[in-house]
Each structure stands twice: as C-alpha cells, then as structure tokens.
Image 1 (tube, rainbow, N blue to C red):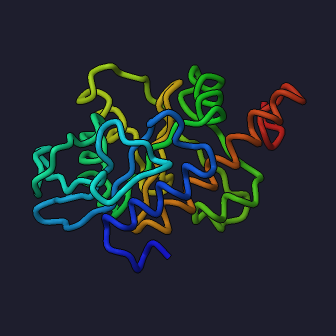
Image 2 (cartoon, rainbow, N blue to C red):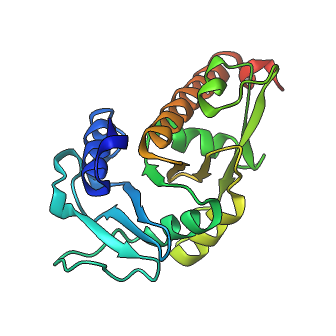
Image 3 (cartoon, one colour):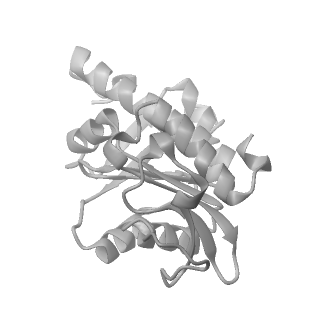
Length: 211
C-alpha cells in the first residue's frame, strides 16, 4: 500500500498504477505526495517524465517557492504551482492530476453549468458521501495558459467536501489526506465521469435523471 511507502516511492507506485489505466498518456499529468508541512516540501514528478516508466530520480523534492529541496538535474512539473496552492488551501497530503478522455469530455459538456452534478450513484460513498440522497457538484475551471492563474482558479474552486476540480478540456486535480485516499477519490471520479458521459449519450439526460 502506498500509505506505508516513503513519499518518493509512493509517487513512483502511484504513477505505475495510474499509467496502467491509461490516465497518464504521452508524459502528461503530475503526481505529488507531501513530505512535510512546515515549511511545505512535496515529492512531485519532474517535467517531461514518462509516467509508465517512472524512476525514483524522476521524483523531485520541491519547496512551496518552487525551488528544489534536493539537488537534481531535472525541473519539476510546470504545474507544481497548482499542487502548492492545493496543499496550502486544503491541507491535503497528496495531489493527483491526470488527463483522460472522459474527464475532458465531461468538462466540456458541463462547462456552461460550471460543474458536473452527481446524484443517485453508489460510488458517491467512495467520495465519503454516505448521506441519503447524496448529491455533489464537481467544479470546473477554465484552462488558463498562465499557470499561476490556473493555480489560483483551482484553489478558489476547491471545496473540502468534493476532493476534485476539473480543468476544462485538460484534466482533473484530485487530492486526499494520503495517497490511498487520493487514488480512491480519483478512481471514483473517473468512473462517475464515464457513467455521466455514456448515460447522457444514451438518454440525453444528466445522470440520475436530472434535467
């Protein structure tokens, strides 16, 4: 289990699992696990790394100011700043960012609504919503070219009770208190996004029959 691994090894393990699902194509995506909180240091994938074959030296220890905490010839992911803002805003322990066909499709389909409504799904329990008639909305932000602007938008949209934010035609940032939580939430989101897209394609309705 990733919870019992050191942060760098946990990132390598997560990359192997998520790449095997096809969620990190063409060196896309970025994954991080917090090393320490004060001051913030995270273990994060380097820029341009092939996540299907990630090695320990492809995972860098990076501070909140985006400087390296340990020497490396590599640069951290360009989207490290988004991870920083989420750690600061939510206080989470792991952030996962993946690009999939269904998270891209659902972000386009629900862009005008500002979020993806989810109700009537058993897998909402995997997002820690056990209440009867649970219903959540996954927020969507625009795909800003300026990464500081993107980071601010994702952090502003982030809510403690919905552990993910979609970026329009880009991907999702999901987080958790630890690596296992973040992976569970991400898997639940991706299942639900695929369901929503397929249901809408078959019926013309939002999932759960919501118009």
